[in-house]
Image (tube, rainbow, N blue to C red; front, side, top):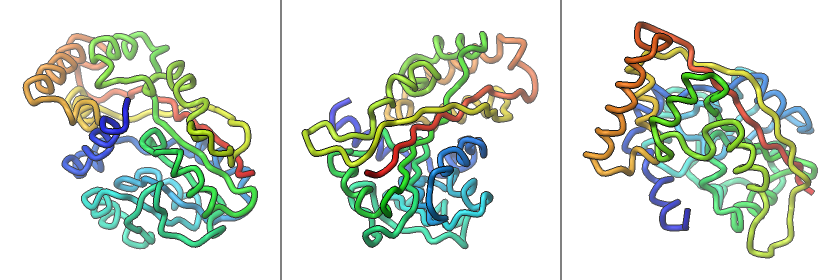
Length: 259
């Protein structure tokens, strides 16, 4: 994905901020604990915080959280749902915080939108010595047969290269260093996955997939065809055709330490 395409996709969420807040899953608490485990203090930045899905989990775990989000509509949803959290307008490339003021920076389903050539040094700037940077992604467990079928039917725009475990591991393994010859500011990456799940119906799972960037940027006719194909598949499967079911997820974590 080139720079223009990444900007198009990353800026698509604001129009669906309400649906994102309603339908996107939270993050497995065990995954968030693992991400924070080496941090030397409680000061955590949720970077690219969206509507606050990861922020809420951090609050529940007792972290001292600041949220930073560039999209005004997403930030409005975050402030509405988590009014006690300090929530700032900003981006990974321009973080409105002082040097060495944060012990851990976490990003939930957001690090792939960062321009790490700029964001890497900026994140390193606001981290205390030895601070932690961790990206978290909720991925669909395609080791489950019907989920594998759903991925095939949906197509890569709806369920893409970071949305299933094996491809997530490959796509994120070296995501944190800049690619332009800037000296690396972070150590070797660690990856881990934690079981998770989300209660869905066929309708609400289609609504969840409709909040993905690849679907949001589709022409209307293509979007309707894609979502219709997904709904037809879910209606045809005994696991998903009637009432609520659990969508099998894993929360994957990429963790690095600031050098």
